[in-house]
Image 1 (cartoon, rainbow, N blue to C red):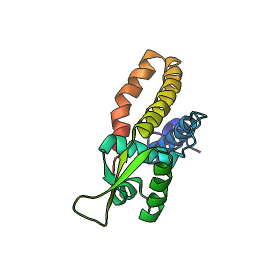
Image 2 (image 1 turned 180 degrees about the vertical axis):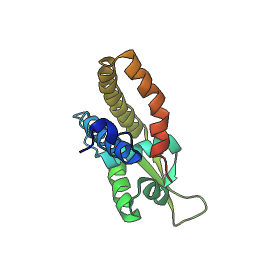
Image 3 (image 1 turned 90 degrees about the horizontal axis):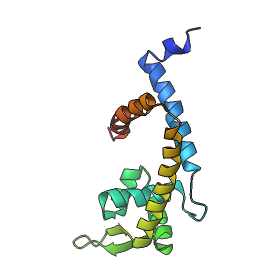
Image 4 (image 1 turned 180 degrees about the horizontal axis):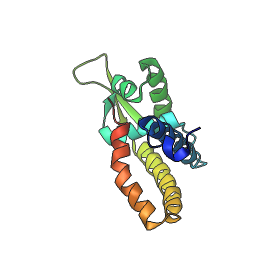
Length: 149
């Protein structure tokens, strides 16, 4: 049986170790939700996409979030009912609806991010300066890995 150190020296071993660690961190961050926020992680991802990219069609949102259009339509409808997004007809294509982040949606998203960032900042303080430096250098690499193919 190879040692753990030897396994992580291979690309397959590194992939496995990263997958496990990133998924655990994601679950831990997901648990740091504001108790007054009733939105799902999927709904929060839609708010984040609108914050990052601006107004998008339901089809574009579905493609970005890798879900089917009818599913995104239901999510957008719930977000609109909660006052988190607004919808309007596309100027030139009557078949499309454009979705934009509302002030309520923006405030919800930013409060959620602030809470999760504060939790992570507290955890980072427990690390050594060298460990924080490694993470600082790794963050852009992890971001690149997360991008579309």
